[in-house]
Length: 265
Image 1 (tube, rainbow, N blue to C red):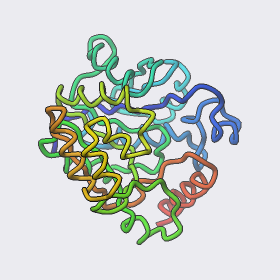
Image 2: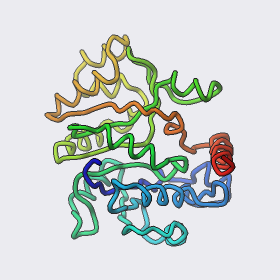
Image 3: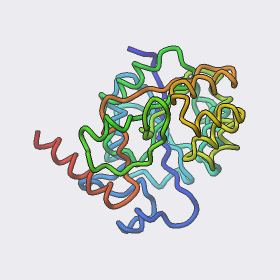
Image 4: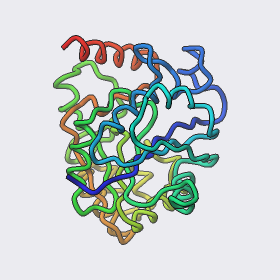
């Protein structure tokens, strides 16, 4: 078993009405029900059942909006809320600066999102079990793994020499060295879906290799981490469902189908 982690659930949303929340008559995306249960509650239940997790913190713009969802999860582990009004990276840095005594957290952290109702205990165990000695680990699903089970899947694919990758909304930050990645992310967050622009922050040579797909994502992360004096690692997920978050009604329909199928099995 890997070291005990504090799990952080990102449950905030960008300014303005969230399209998915509006579609389902909710103000907060995290409270959109999937099979009658708020997405946040699904995530809480999974993290509560995960052996590697000892504490759970929800990061959002308000601290009291998720009381019912937390109560429905009936967690046996402590669940706290931390108000983060900036971007993701700024909120995580503030969480770490506050520390456990100030309602925040310390390393190691497992970071995920509230719109990941299909997250399972096995996914968490596989990811954390594969983090190894990395200061920062990022979970991704390779396109062939996804299409083998979901041939019609529509995802955002980041194409590299070692395949096309879609994010799984799972990140491990294990040691203080990972703070450097959060600091850089503050400047690069707008480039998160354009990999060559992300790698531009580490020099045009690495960006050019990303553009021309002459470097794999695993090697790109390793090199980028080295330039921040830390170890960064790609963790390929074996279950393609790890890359299915719920951003739009079609995702929602798929999530409900998969959860119902799981209940019947």
